[in-house]
Length: 203
Figure 1 (cartoon, rainbow, N blue to C red):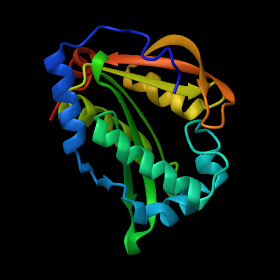
Figure 2 (cartoon, rainbow, N blue to C red; figure 1 turned 60 degrees about the horizontal axis):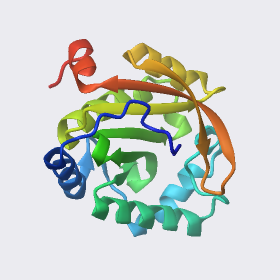
Figure 3 (cartoon, rainbow, N blue to C red; figure 1 turned 45 degrees about the horizontal axis):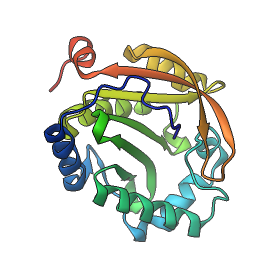
């Protein structure tokens, strides 16, 4: 996450911020995905080990090991308890982890960011775009956010096209810091709840 995100900063009222934190603490599912638990470390590590999955994502632990993925899950459970983050996994047949979603929340700004990835076998089928749109809508509706702020690497053309296609506004560039302290230049997009409702509606 970059320290200068979100770009647009409109302070939420104390009541709104508290409601967002409560919604995060109470969340257990997002669509077809469920809250990640410590027992998911091996399955999530198997998914993330594929370079097609982890290469474009700056927020994953480095080095990427089963132990670091377990710590990644634990950190998100602590963030959930603070009302500031969630980690979901999507299971396929036989319980294989086929995707994950990383939700970061800034309650005091009424804003959030969504990251994640799908198993390569699901790439190119439109599942990522449909899932992202459903997740964005869920963040507005279920968490009560007023703003979404998204980032993508300068070379991540697929995510750039997805965000542009959904109507997110380009807000320039930022420097994203990886967990190991290294940095990556990222493009930034934003969309307000009102803009999403006007373009996509809810329900």
